[in-house]
Length: 190
Image 1: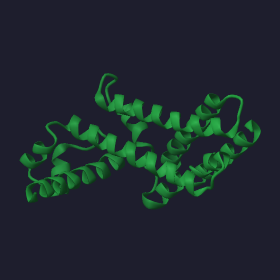
Image 2: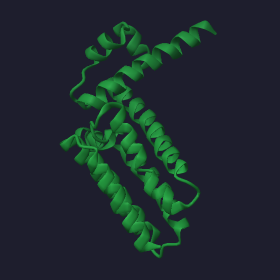
Image 3: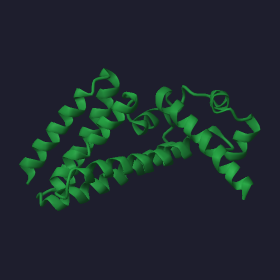
């Protein structure tokens, strides 16, 4: 049992370190040696857990998908029971992310730009967007709008746009503006 706990703690440390580095510097901007140095593990230890950098990137993206979806859903839930309020409130997750560590953009947009088209990283990124859009479509459907798919797509574009503009401008006001745009869209659609 102690070996499994040690393995889990080490794997967690590697993933946490790699995640911070990938988020701040991009996938291509981080080498395995940097992950090893900053996580404090031996090269052989890293390769016991992740045989390649691609495996490490995939684990990071899967973990980020789960974490980001949980953050969006928690922010939506905090906004109340009405789906329209939840669609607006989910943008608080973007504000929370900015306040925690500034905007380094969306890790999935970054991965999509950096990863080869046939890579696992790109496939995980596409699954993330599909998962997010399915959730948004369910929320928009519950508002009673005539075209929930179109409204969900527009909200997804505002999320992506706020993250990209936030990265470029380093200004949390872009999230406030995206949130106001969603409020307007939801009001018009209901």
